[in-house]
Amino acid sequence: MLQKEVAERLCAKPGSSDYGALTAGMSLTCEADYIFELSPSSFNPPPKVKSAVIKLTRRETPLTTNIDRVQRVIQAAVSARRKTFEFAFAWASVEKEDVQPAWKNVVWTRHSSGTDSSGTFVRSARF
Image (cartoon, rainbow, N blue to C red; front, side, top):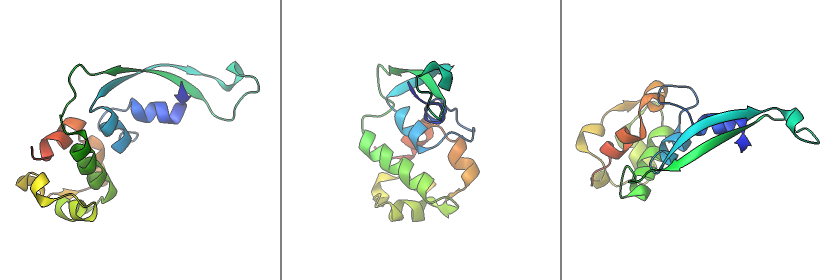
């Protein structure tokens, strides 16, 4: 059980406004399913926020064997929006050797950072 807004972010799909680094990072190792909402009246005293229950299912095989490297790529990509990947990676101390050359000059926009799945981030990291 989590605050509804956090649950929505964890369960967000690529392309939605709730999708971001939290979603992409978590989905490297788990799949999240939104189960149901709880109203504040379900608690005593009632909180000022809504709650939701989600189900996290650990992937049998993570999307990558190098979670730390891909997490750095994800953080760099979403932290430096409207910048080139090369700038974003330098800003986040991601080594150039860790990134596929084709991604280095791509401009990362707010729109694209919300539409790329965690698989895209995994593919952008060089292994």
